[in-house]
Image (cartoon, rainbow, N blue to C red):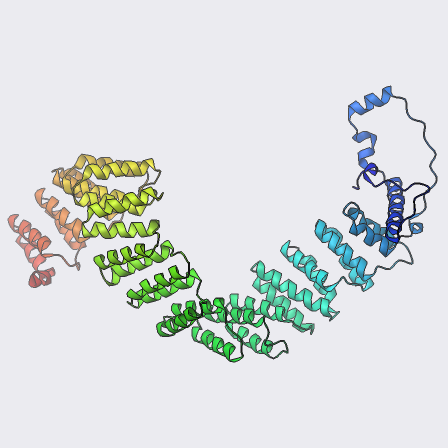
Amino acid sequence: MAKCYSEWPPLPPLHPPRRTPSQTSLWTIRRQLASFVLHCSRSCASPLLEPKNLPDEFHAVSASTPAPVPVPVSPLPDAPKLGISNKFIRGLCSDRQTEQLAFECYRRALHQPEFLPDKKTMNALTVQLLRAKQWSSLEFLVEDFRAYGVMPERRTCARLVASCVKARKFGLADMVLGVLEGKRGAPAAVAFSSAMQAYNKLHMYRSTLLVYERMRAARLSRDADAYRAVMAACGALGKPEMVASLLKQYKSHKWYPSESCVETYAIVCDALGRAGRASDALKCLREMEADGIAPNATIYSSIIRSLADAHESSAAEDLYNEAWKKGMLGDPDMFLKVIVMHVEAGRVEKTMGVAKDMRETGLRVTDCILSTIVNGFVKRRGLKPAIRAYDKLIALGCEPGQVTYASVINVYCQLGRSDRAESVFSEMIDRGFDKCVVAYGNMISMYGKISRASDAMRLLAVMKKKRCEPNIWVYNSLLDMHGRLGNSRQAEKIWKEMMRRKIQPDRISYTAIINAFNRSGELDRCMDLYQEFRETGGKVDTALAGLMVGVFSKCSRFNELIELLKDMQGTRLDRRLYLTVLRSLRDAGLEVHVKWLQTNFSFVEEKT
């Protein structure tokens, strides 16, 4: 609906002052617009002015107020006599107050026999409808592109197709491309290229390939942007052969080499690297340099990442040093790949140099990188070298995160340095990392091993207060602690809490709580839990078997003991378990079972 008439600029007086040519044209447009608006208001009444749409209060006031005397109005000219021109329509498009009427005015102008839309008018209407997102009106306008053989400007065609794809109006985009397909001009080539780039932004790479094939079938000229778009799509779809073929075609054109070639090579190197062809990506880099094109940081980072993933350590390290000398290193993901490569190759000392390089370039050494270095030292060099590496990283100004803190706490716990573990844990909490289940689990496990049950339970309470839900590992640590202490009551409380929180116990859980009841002499409870474990499909290991051998022997339940041993047949038993079973069977006078044990498990006795 157009704005109210009172909002339009007033008409000029009968004897206007002298105007400049620009003012005269503006006055003429406004006069024509006023005539057109008045004609529209007479030809189709607005529903807002219908009596049925007015509120009741208006009718009440109207009844008490005398109706004004109607003023005679001269008859309006017919639509063909309005004389709507291309210039008039463009004038409507150029004013934000009147642009909404431009398309309707254009539709009325089509009824004039002498009216033919020109390129500027189509361009102005397309821009206005795109700005207003009037997709249905754009469909009519695109049909007129075909009917009148008039297209907007090249940039507007590209914008129209890209906007349609971005708004997911794929049918309309296809319609525009269909109109342009037979033109074989610059607008068509640019529009097809713009469509491929827009599809790539939506990760619709197969649609990009379809547009490219359509463009090639229509024998449209392909510019550098079109080649880059289709190469990027082929790289994302894992088609390195097609990328290499397109690169050859790209290099055969006259625009090669140019500044845009760097972006093209970046796409090609990334596609080859993603396909696992790191050596080909490196070869492409050398060809690029031979053609006089200097690679940028993106290309260096892409190829170094691909070489590191391919475990080509020597080539990756050489290229890393080359890029470092040129100041082309600045990708944190690339640094992580290099660090992982060094760790897997056993050269963990070189990871410290990579971290130092990151600090010198002004990059933050991420928590992921720090934890990778620390865990790499633990795996390759041991616990104490890992702590020394951590201290050096802190001296470089690296700030650990939650994962690194948890790793360092675990190292200190394994070293038995409870004081240092508590210090690092407090530092982690002070920095706001107070919901790390792994760190809580490590601390609780450490307290359990050094028999500090009260500290472990206090930490569990803190954990719950922080709304950090304990997992099965935390509960197993508590059960193991109470089991070794023989505190079956506390172990049962933990067990019930697990059931209440619907945490399914595993074999370690059953072993720990059975050990607690065994130490407190509650053998019937041990057998009930063992039977429950077997009914749930649990498989017995040597730790649980050692416990149950003692329980069955104390209760003189030798049938269950033999069944347990049959289930474990083929499992390597340690010396202690073997001798315990042998002694129990001999004390019970079961010589037949003694011979069976010696026959089936004699290899263990020979080794011991």
